[in-house]
Length: 256
Ligand SMILES: Nc1ncnc2c1ncn2[C@@H]1O[C@H](COP(=O)(O)OP(=O)(O)OP(=O)(O)O)[C@@H](O)[C@H]1O
Ligand SMILES: [Mg+2]
Image (cartoon, rainbow, N blue to C red):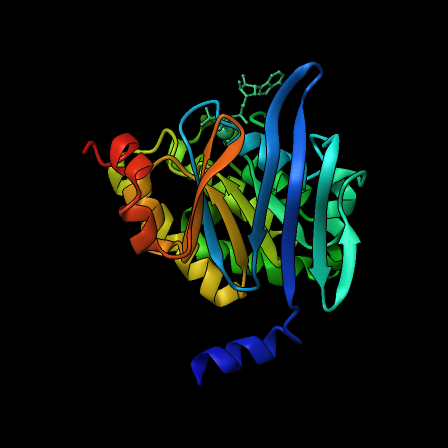
Protein backbone atom coordinates (compact mmCIF):
# COMPACT_ATOMS: atom_id res chain seq x y z
CA UNK A 1 0.00 0.00 0.00
CA UNK A 2 2.68 2.45 1.04
CA UNK A 3 4.88 1.61 -1.92
CA UNK A 4 2.00 2.09 -4.37
CA UNK A 5 1.41 5.57 -2.95
CA UNK A 6 5.09 6.41 -3.33
CA UNK A 7 5.10 5.09 -6.88
CA UNK A 8 1.99 6.98 -7.89
CA UNK A 9 3.49 10.22 -6.71
CA UNK A 10 6.54 9.59 -8.91
CA UNK A 11 4.46 9.18 -12.09
CA UNK A 12 4.46 6.15 -14.40
CA UNK A 13 7.00 3.42 -13.72
CA UNK A 14 9.51 3.03 -16.50
CA UNK A 15 10.48 -0.53 -17.24
CA UNK A 16 14.16 -0.14 -17.98
CA UNK A 17 16.68 -2.90 -18.40
CA UNK A 18 20.27 -3.03 -19.56
CA UNK A 19 21.43 -5.89 -21.74
CA UNK A 20 25.16 -6.14 -22.39
CA UNK A 21 26.13 -8.74 -24.92
CA UNK A 22 29.64 -10.03 -25.54
CA UNK A 23 31.46 -6.71 -25.21
CA UNK A 24 35.15 -6.28 -25.82
CA UNK A 25 36.73 -3.11 -24.43
CA UNK A 26 39.99 -1.73 -23.16
CA UNK A 27 42.44 1.11 -23.37
CA UNK A 28 44.33 1.35 -26.66
CA UNK A 29 46.16 -1.91 -27.18
CA UNK A 30 45.24 -3.15 -23.70
CA UNK A 31 42.19 -5.39 -23.87
CA UNK A 32 40.38 -5.51 -20.53
CA UNK A 33 36.88 -6.89 -21.18
CA UNK A 34 37.00 -10.00 -23.28
CA UNK A 35 33.46 -10.88 -24.25
CA UNK A 36 31.36 -9.82 -21.27
CA UNK A 37 27.60 -10.42 -21.16
CA UNK A 38 25.60 -9.01 -18.25
CA UNK A 39 21.96 -8.02 -17.88
CA UNK A 40 20.16 -5.98 -15.26
CA UNK A 41 16.38 -6.34 -15.05
CA UNK A 42 13.95 -3.64 -13.90
CA UNK A 43 14.05 -3.19 -10.13
CA UNK A 44 16.96 -5.54 -9.58
CA UNK A 45 20.11 -4.95 -7.56
CA UNK A 46 22.90 -6.79 -9.31
CA UNK A 47 26.41 -6.98 -7.87
CA UNK A 48 29.57 -7.20 -9.91
CA UNK A 49 32.22 -8.95 -7.84
CA UNK A 50 35.89 -9.27 -8.65
CA UNK A 51 39.22 -8.34 -7.15
CA UNK A 52 41.41 -5.39 -8.20
CA UNK A 53 42.07 -4.86 -11.88
CA UNK A 54 39.61 -7.42 -13.23
CA UNK A 55 37.50 -4.95 -15.20
CA UNK A 56 34.58 -3.87 -12.95
CA UNK A 57 35.11 -0.14 -13.46
CA UNK A 58 35.82 -0.66 -17.16
CA UNK A 59 32.42 -2.33 -17.53
CA UNK A 60 30.63 0.45 -15.65
CA UNK A 61 32.51 3.07 -17.67
CA UNK A 62 31.54 1.29 -20.88
CA UNK A 63 27.84 1.54 -19.94
CA UNK A 64 28.29 5.27 -19.20
CA UNK A 65 29.98 5.92 -22.56
CA UNK A 66 33.34 6.76 -20.96
CA UNK A 67 35.04 3.66 -22.42
CA UNK A 68 33.97 2.66 -25.93
CA UNK A 69 33.72 -1.09 -26.64
CA UNK A 70 35.21 -2.35 -29.89
CA UNK A 71 32.75 -5.25 -30.19
CA UNK A 72 29.47 -6.42 -28.73
CA UNK A 73 26.41 -4.40 -27.74
CA UNK A 74 25.03 -2.45 -24.79
CA UNK A 75 21.29 -1.99 -25.12
CA UNK A 76 18.99 0.01 -22.89
CA UNK A 77 15.47 -1.34 -23.19
CA UNK A 78 13.17 1.44 -22.18
CA UNK A 79 9.44 0.87 -22.25
CA UNK A 80 9.78 -1.53 -25.14
CA UNK A 81 12.22 0.66 -27.08
CA UNK A 82 15.74 -0.65 -27.73
CA UNK A 83 18.42 2.03 -27.49
CA UNK A 84 22.01 1.21 -28.40
CA UNK A 85 24.27 2.97 -25.89
CA UNK A 86 27.55 2.31 -27.69
CA UNK A 87 28.76 5.52 -29.35
CA UNK A 88 26.60 7.76 -27.18
CA UNK A 89 28.25 10.48 -25.12
CA UNK A 90 28.07 10.20 -21.32
CA UNK A 91 25.70 13.19 -21.10
CA UNK A 92 23.28 11.52 -23.55
CA UNK A 93 23.40 8.38 -21.42
CA UNK A 94 22.65 10.44 -18.29
CA UNK A 95 19.79 11.95 -20.33
CA UNK A 96 18.38 8.44 -20.79
CA UNK A 97 18.09 8.04 -17.03
CA UNK A 98 21.35 6.25 -16.17
CA UNK A 99 23.63 7.78 -13.54
CA UNK A 100 26.88 6.70 -11.95
CA UNK A 101 28.40 7.03 -8.51
CA UNK A 102 32.03 6.76 -9.63
CA UNK A 103 34.84 4.93 -7.91
CA UNK A 104 36.68 7.30 -5.57
CA UNK A 105 33.71 9.79 -5.57
CA UNK A 106 35.27 12.18 -8.18
CA UNK A 107 33.87 15.30 -6.60
CA UNK A 108 34.97 18.82 -7.38
CA UNK A 109 36.90 19.33 -4.13
CA UNK A 110 37.14 23.11 -4.38
CA UNK A 111 33.37 23.49 -4.86
CA UNK A 112 30.72 23.45 -2.16
CA UNK A 113 28.24 20.65 -1.51
CA UNK A 114 25.57 22.76 -3.21
CA UNK A 115 27.71 23.35 -6.30
CA UNK A 116 28.62 19.68 -6.58
CA UNK A 117 24.95 18.71 -6.39
CA UNK A 118 23.89 21.25 -8.99
CA UNK A 119 26.43 19.76 -11.41
CA UNK A 120 24.45 16.54 -11.22
CA UNK A 121 21.24 18.25 -12.29
CA UNK A 122 22.08 19.35 -15.82
CA UNK A 123 19.83 16.76 -17.45
CA UNK A 124 16.70 18.42 -18.91
CA UNK A 125 14.20 16.36 -16.91
CA UNK A 126 16.32 16.91 -13.81
CA UNK A 127 16.43 20.69 -14.20
CA UNK A 128 12.65 20.79 -14.19
CA UNK A 129 12.57 18.88 -10.90
CA UNK A 130 15.57 20.49 -9.27
CA UNK A 131 13.78 21.64 -6.10
CA UNK A 132 12.05 18.29 -5.61
CA UNK A 133 15.23 16.27 -6.24
CA UNK A 134 17.31 18.49 -4.02
CA UNK A 135 14.82 18.11 -1.20
CA UNK A 136 14.85 14.34 -1.70
CA UNK A 137 18.67 14.24 -1.58
CA UNK A 138 18.87 16.37 1.54
CA UNK A 139 16.22 14.29 3.24
CA UNK A 140 18.11 11.13 2.30
CA UNK A 141 21.39 12.60 3.55
CA UNK A 142 20.55 15.10 6.33
CA UNK A 143 24.26 15.63 7.06
CA UNK A 144 24.53 17.35 3.68
CA UNK A 145 21.86 19.88 4.57
CA UNK A 146 23.90 21.00 7.55
CA UNK A 147 27.01 21.26 5.39
CA UNK A 148 25.37 22.60 2.26
CA UNK A 149 27.70 25.59 1.86
CA UNK A 150 30.83 23.74 2.95
CA UNK A 151 33.73 22.97 0.58
CA UNK A 152 33.48 19.31 -0.46
CA UNK A 153 37.23 18.66 -0.33
CA UNK A 154 37.32 19.40 3.41
CA UNK A 155 34.68 16.83 4.29
CA UNK A 156 35.14 13.28 5.61
CA UNK A 157 35.23 10.23 3.36
CA UNK A 158 31.71 9.23 4.42
CA UNK A 159 30.34 12.69 3.74
CA UNK A 160 32.05 12.81 0.37
CA UNK A 161 30.47 9.48 -0.54
CA UNK A 162 27.08 10.97 0.40
CA UNK A 163 27.74 13.90 -1.94
CA UNK A 164 28.65 11.50 -4.76
CA UNK A 165 25.37 9.61 -4.23
CA UNK A 166 23.32 12.76 -3.96
CA UNK A 167 24.92 14.20 -7.10
CA UNK A 168 23.94 11.07 -9.04
CA UNK A 169 20.37 11.28 -7.71
CA UNK A 170 20.10 14.91 -8.83
CA UNK A 171 19.80 13.65 -12.43
CA UNK A 172 16.64 11.74 -11.38
CA UNK A 173 17.93 8.42 -12.76
CA UNK A 174 16.02 5.18 -13.05
CA UNK A 175 19.20 3.11 -13.30
CA UNK A 176 22.10 3.72 -10.92
CA UNK A 177 25.60 2.33 -11.47
CA UNK A 178 27.59 2.35 -8.23
CA UNK A 179 31.32 1.69 -8.36
CA UNK A 180 32.69 0.32 -5.05
CA UNK A 181 30.69 2.40 -2.56
CA UNK A 182 32.48 0.88 0.44
CA UNK A 183 36.02 1.83 -0.54
CA UNK A 184 37.79 3.97 2.05
CA UNK A 185 34.92 3.90 4.54
CA UNK A 186 35.10 2.66 8.12
CA UNK A 187 33.04 -0.53 8.70
CA UNK A 188 30.22 1.31 10.47
CA UNK A 189 29.92 3.73 7.55
CA UNK A 190 29.90 0.85 5.08
CA UNK A 191 26.94 -0.63 6.98
CA UNK A 192 25.11 2.68 6.79
CA UNK A 193 25.91 3.17 3.13
CA UNK A 194 24.61 -0.27 2.19
CA UNK A 195 21.42 0.31 4.20
CA UNK A 196 21.04 3.70 2.52
CA UNK A 197 21.37 2.15 -0.96
CA UNK A 198 18.59 -0.31 -0.09
CA UNK A 199 16.41 2.55 1.18
CA UNK A 200 17.04 4.72 -1.88
CA UNK A 201 16.28 1.82 -4.13
CA UNK A 202 12.88 1.27 -2.56
CA UNK A 203 11.92 4.92 -2.42
CA UNK A 204 13.14 5.77 -5.90
CA UNK A 205 12.20 2.53 -7.60
CA UNK A 206 15.79 2.28 -8.82
CA UNK A 207 17.48 -0.46 -10.76
CA UNK A 208 21.05 -0.92 -9.54
CA UNK A 209 24.28 -2.36 -10.85
CA UNK A 210 26.95 -2.19 -8.17
CA UNK A 211 30.64 -3.12 -8.35
CA UNK A 212 31.81 -4.14 -4.90
CA UNK A 213 34.65 -6.11 -3.34
CA UNK A 214 33.03 -6.30 0.06
CA UNK A 215 31.11 -9.51 -0.57
CA UNK A 216 29.38 -9.79 2.81
CA UNK A 217 28.04 -6.26 2.55
CA UNK A 218 27.06 -6.54 -1.12
CA UNK A 219 24.95 -9.66 -0.63
CA UNK A 220 22.88 -7.92 2.04
CA UNK A 221 21.16 -5.99 -0.73
CA UNK A 222 21.92 -7.82 -3.98
CA UNK A 223 19.37 -10.00 -5.73
CA UNK A 224 22.06 -11.80 -7.73
CA UNK A 225 25.49 -11.19 -9.18
CA UNK A 226 28.42 -11.90 -11.41
CA UNK A 227 32.08 -12.61 -10.71
CA UNK A 228 34.46 -11.04 -13.17
CA UNK A 229 37.96 -12.47 -13.51
CA UNK A 230 40.50 -11.16 -16.03
CA UNK A 231 37.80 -9.41 -18.01
CA UNK A 232 35.52 -12.41 -18.34
CA UNK A 233 32.43 -13.46 -16.42
CA UNK A 234 33.72 -16.41 -14.43
CA UNK A 235 30.42 -17.10 -12.68
CA UNK A 236 26.83 -15.90 -12.74
CA UNK A 237 24.94 -16.45 -9.48
CA UNK A 238 21.15 -16.40 -9.89
CA UNK A 239 20.77 -15.57 -6.20
CA UNK A 240 22.96 -14.85 -3.18
CA UNK A 241 22.96 -18.52 -2.12
CA UNK A 242 24.56 -19.52 -5.40
CA UNK A 243 27.17 -16.81 -4.91
CA UNK A 244 27.92 -17.88 -1.35
CA UNK A 245 28.43 -21.46 -2.43
CA UNK A 246 30.69 -20.62 -5.34
CA UNK A 247 34.31 -21.78 -5.06
CA UNK A 248 35.76 -18.48 -6.34
CA UNK A 249 33.81 -16.58 -3.70
CA UNK A 250 34.92 -18.96 -0.98
CA UNK A 251 38.51 -18.57 -2.12
CA UNK A 252 38.59 -14.80 -2.64
CA UNK A 253 36.11 -13.40 -0.17
CA UNK A 254 35.28 -15.88 2.50
CA UNK A 255 38.82 -17.09 3.17
CA UNK A 256 37.78 -20.73 2.88
N1 LIG B 1 42.71 4.56 -18.23
C1 LIG B 1 43.34 3.39 -18.30
N2 LIG B 1 44.37 3.21 -19.17
C2 LIG B 1 45.00 2.02 -19.26
N3 LIG B 1 44.67 0.92 -18.53
C3 LIG B 1 43.67 1.06 -17.65
C4 LIG B 1 42.95 2.29 -17.49
N4 LIG B 1 42.00 2.09 -16.55
C5 LIG B 1 42.13 0.82 -16.14
N5 LIG B 1 43.13 0.19 -16.80
C6 LIG B 1 43.53 -1.21 -16.64
O1 LIG B 1 42.43 -2.03 -16.94
C7 LIG B 1 42.38 -3.15 -16.05
C8 LIG B 1 41.01 -3.22 -15.39
O2 LIG B 1 40.83 -2.06 -14.58
P1 LIG B 1 39.48 -1.70 -13.86
O3 LIG B 1 39.66 -0.35 -13.31
O4 LIG B 1 38.34 -1.92 -14.78
O5 LIG B 1 39.45 -2.81 -12.72
P2 LIG B 1 38.53 -2.93 -11.43
O6 LIG B 1 37.98 -4.31 -11.44
O7 LIG B 1 37.58 -1.81 -11.37
O8 LIG B 1 39.60 -2.80 -10.25
P3 LIG B 1 39.49 -2.08 -8.82
O9 LIG B 1 38.77 -3.02 -7.92
O10 LIG B 1 40.93 -1.91 -8.41
O11 LIG B 1 38.78 -0.78 -9.00
C9 LIG B 1 43.54 -2.98 -15.09
O12 LIG B 1 44.58 -3.78 -15.52
C10 LIG B 1 43.88 -1.51 -15.21
O13 LIG B 1 45.24 -1.30 -14.97
MG1 LIG C 1 37.32 -0.25 -10.11
